[in-house]
Image 1 (tube, one colour):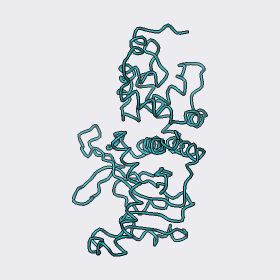
Image 2: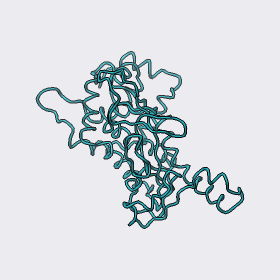
Image 3: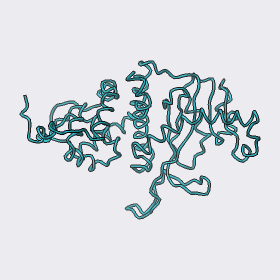
Image 4: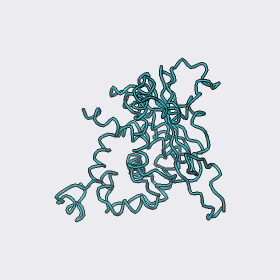
Length: 316
């Protein structure tokens, strides 16, 4: 049995829990750890000659904390030294060894190199499905811009070549787009892709369907989606919003206006994953250069957001 340290005793004598502790407790109870570990274990380094790897459960938990607070690898190492609740969440002690930034970096690269972000999103959704949160017959599609640094004051003297600029309203944005397909009943993200910001939303619509839909909702940016070659064979009802200028000219009490209002009320669910991504997890700007690394991070973030969206039903 490990001898408790003075830090352990001081922590146990606290009078209240912080918001960080409460949030980590929530996520600890929501995340299907065994399923996620099972997806990673086949490619995780085995103990043998050379450096002994940290246990997979420890590194997965450290990686999740890094996502919760949108931290760099050095920032995550610092947090492990600074925060007792984070160490307890990860199963670590200040008196023992703690993963350094290189170890954290190598684990992140392991996930990226094997494209495990999408796989972990699938595992989370499979877990939700096993709890009765099955995908329904409707999908909402949408996309959001994630900003990237547009400055050329860097070692390469150039902007990220995989990111591009686009105009939204009267504002220019440089970065990437996250495209998602969301279940219209549960608000769960079942599919996602990432592109440069200048790629039109409509081009990714067919990649966001799970195949069992009978109806798909989208905003006015998806006008004409049913005419595209890749969507001609799909037996779905595309319920796309009217152009804003045309909608403003409608009589508020007309059938057309009421229909547009009904479409908007359904589409509202697609904004919630973006809210969690950018406000709760702080991913309003890209963390890395290139699309691949950011795509893997986004996939797991949307998966973690799905767990929060389903929290009430899971605990019930």
